[in-house]
Length: 72
Image (cartoon, rainbow, N blue to C red):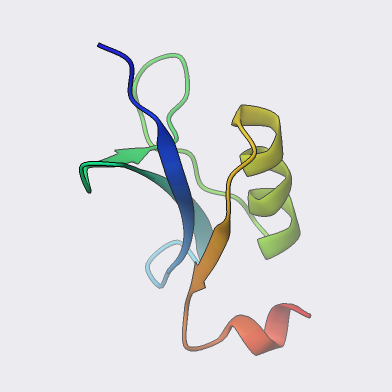
């Protein structure tokens, strides 16, 4: 079954102070961006997380953080 990704959500992780990437498909299912071992990736900056989205697949990006203004 082929899933079409409709959105990438960048989430600020307060525990690691990093950014994680979750993709959302047409049915509303979330798929975290993981490494080869299935462990969710964490990025040091918002820019790194955005670059990872563009490498994995181009789709609209939504930033989900109260502190995203500090990353500009």
